[in-house]
Image 1: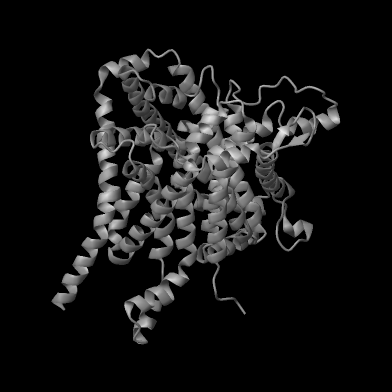
Image 2: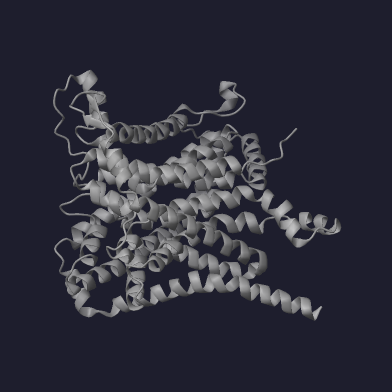
Length: 563
């Protein structure tokens, strides 16, 4: 027995070592380097004297908070429709493909779709008779509307993916259905039941995703470089210019700005928390008042319409519009990548060419770099988390979850800057190892959040049954447990691949100009005049994640079928 205990302790230590050296220590050291920037008083004075500080910060907060709020409302509305119809599972695969499209690639396609000579204007020209592009400021507009719209399209899909994951849990589905029927029996409409009974129970599941969305939307760099305002720019772009400056004083001011925007984001979240607490009694008073015939157009009362389940044309139309939006963005990129001559108002190019793709084929180094990083980091993270979840007690999970949320809840600018400073001291900037470690951090955070829940909820009765059949631990893992968990294993690996593939800030800083990844190339090209080449690189940026997501969805299907 003592030997078994010693062996178990050894397994636990062995499972912890890769996690400590590849995730915990790099993250904590990164945060220490970031904290050192908070004590440079000269940098702070320079920051508060920056002429674009106030305007840039206002733009960042406006675009970030509005994108977050709109995304939450749309996600809850679409989820309501499909949950009421009993078709929640049908959203999952389509949402996975939407999430596989990197933010940067989507932003580039959105810019080409919405620009004055873009595909949307050409479609409108059919009815209006335009012979020249309209004088619209549809990208880089001074109010950040284009950036906000693109963020809403991406973050709605993310929040809806979170909601679908919750609503597809069998225990929650059964509980919600029972509560809905009880609410109907008390005279509540479907809309009232959703808002008063179900949404308050869904909100706790959305707290961390909403925080991640708000921080990301308020501090995003690559999308704002493609779509955001320029005079003044959003505050993240102001910081980015300083960080990449050759002047050490500007670098210090950029570091102070990264800390400052993190503090501001924390204050916004604190204000939201205080407001929510203050409004809770009012909501409780309203929610417990009934019965209610509350209606909103997205849901109609099935008892009046005679349908089996409530439906709603507005919510369904919003989901259709979101899918068409993604399809239009991708179609625009495909057409533009093959366009040699595309005069306005032609709906299709007047001449076609493969020159852009020939240029891409001649410069495959960025693609290979991104592929190798995505494959190695996702495999490493999967191996580390499986070893951890198999060998380490669940009571330590909260500590790891806190670190993962810290990685995702802090601005990428802050994390990337801390990594750059640490790697500079360790002589890892401009090296493969430094680039690999910089990509590994967010990959591990995302994959743990996705994988830990399904893995920990795995029922022990299957292990007991295999033990009764004299199966070895390896037979149980390879023959029973991992095949049953292949869907979350493959989906988390696909997300890790996509996250690594889309990294821009850490790659740009740590690569130090010695390596180039696809996001770096795409951002560089987006400011140039070769639209066909930019479109080709944007398509190349989204294709591998789409392939990996599709493969994960296909191979993650259960081999057992309900008879």
